[in-house]
Amino acid sequence: MIYLITGATGDIGSRVVECLLVCGDGPRILVRDAEKARARYAQQNVGTGAWHARGESAIRASGIAFTFVQPAGFMSNAIGWATSIKAEGVVRAPTGDGRIAFIHPDDIAAVATKALTTQEYEGESLPITGPEALTYAEMTAKIGAAIGKPLRFQPISDEQERHQMIESGAPPEVVAAHVSIYRAIREGRLATVTDNVNRVVGRQAAAFDRWAQENAAACDATSCDALVDIATAAD
Image 1 (tube, helix red, strand yellow):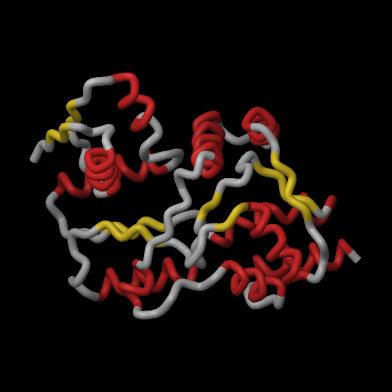
Image 2: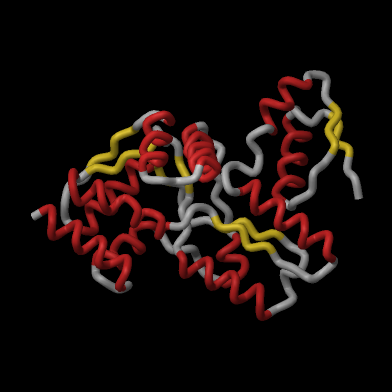
């Protein structure tokens, strides 16, 4: 099915286009200002989302049954901040005051398990997030509270982030994807919070505070070692 959406940069039309994009459908759009439309939609399926969208499209085309579980950023990605926290008590990222609702890995697994073991969500896309959208500064403060040490967040530019990733050996396409995600956070495009964890598994999604406390208390070997090291090094 090919969809044609008129008024695709208007209040309602744009929302319809965005919903179709989330579902993996690439609608045709009819607009008066092509440049406005390009600017609005050029960054849909942000970062690695474009790679996932291609995979989802292939699965849809195959005719097999599916449920797409689409998590926001993983809370466990915050382990990547351990080095700078340990060395300087700081987290750096080009996210500014933008917000994102990171999700607990347990909630991703719970939704995926429910999708695997029931046909209730067959044919659906399930965007899942944590219960609140937080800035990186707020998440940094929550980690600091969990380990009992004051931490600070330092905004940096896209170019600084790009340089750091290149220096670490990241491939160009990975660098570009991450920078686009940070830009989307900064611009407020990834601040959406969904209730799909509650809808699917019947409980609220776990808060970032819980993840930080669990890892600071050494509940998970890999994650905990990093955060325990942070606390020890800060003494």
